[in-house]
Amino acid sequence: MLDTVARQGMVLMGCGKMGGAMLSGWLKGGLPPASVWVTDPYPADWLTGAGVHINADYPEAPAVALIAVKPQMMGDALPAVAALGGGRTLVISVAAGTPISTFEEVFGPGTPVIRAMPNTPAAIGRGITAIIGNSAVTEAHMTLTEDLLSAVGQVVRLENEGQMDAVTAVSGSGPAYVFHLIETLAAAGEAEGLDPGLAMALAKATVGGAGDLAEQAEEDPAQLRVNVTSPNGTTQAALEVLMDEDAGFPALLRRAVKAAADRSKELSRG
Ligand SMILES: NC(=O)c1ccc[n+]([C@@H]2O[C@H](COP(=O)([O-])OP(=O)(O)OC[C@H]3O[C@@H](n4cnc5c(N)ncnc54)[C@H](OP(=O)(O)O)[C@@H]3O)[C@@H](O)[C@H]2O)c1
Image 1 (cartoon, rainbow, N blue to C red):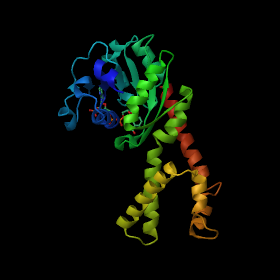
Image 2 (image 1 turned 45 degrees about the vertical axis):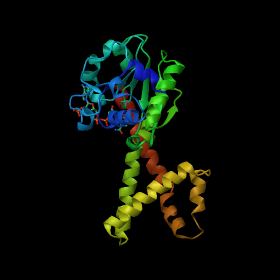
Image 3 (image 1 turned 120 degrees about the vertical axis):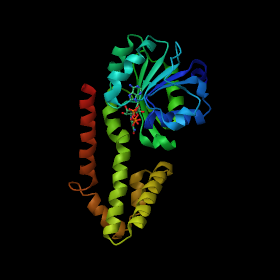
């Protein structure tokens, strides 16, 4: 599946949390390290022993240039890879809030550009990445990108770039909302008298287990919720608080996701 990349090479610009998670997935999946050219000012220790080219001159036409630097570093980073524009190299960006048009300006006309939004569970192969390409992108480019990104989890295609703000607000930023749910569930357990360690163990396993169940079960999450809610029982007592239209999850998450999507739109405007 990664034959084209193994043959022609891949450039990875920025090898921090996200770039590093992806690269380790590809190397584990059999991509030869000698096919990878990494550019990063302070390469991590594991990287220096991995056999990839580090801060070396690029091949003339690698199959893929993956951009994984922070959006605010984009202006410094992109000039070094701009020569790969023109059509022979597929540019994939995972940067939040940087629109496809920014890459089209830097890499020039005819450059296939795919914008991707991954999330941090990619670090354990459980991410979900949404992708959208520009008009120079072919079905072969989309398939290659799906093959690459599936090394770190699921991949979904979007219909237009405008959806990226909502995707960022749901799955890109979403893991942080769930981490906060774990923190606050544990704190609430402590308030009910549990030891901190026990409360945290219960909260983590509950969120992790319920997440897995929601993904694997045939029923949808609403039905799963109904299944564990006995009339007048303990779960119902809590859900009456959480499902309150004004003060519960529905209004709170609507506001939180809207705030993230609005911020993503602002960042895209520069
Ligand atoms: N982490 C996530 O959950 C997540 C989710 C979705 C999208 N993303 C996107 O992924 C991108 C990377 O995020 P991250 O969390 O992986 O950040 P990160 O850990 O800070 O990684 C960025 C890497 O790029 C390096 N870098 C900085 N300037 C560079 C340059 N001029 N040339 C080459 N490399 C350079 C950094 O080196 P130094 O550390 O030495 O500066 C760092 O190793 C961001 O655009 C972000 O929006 C991240």
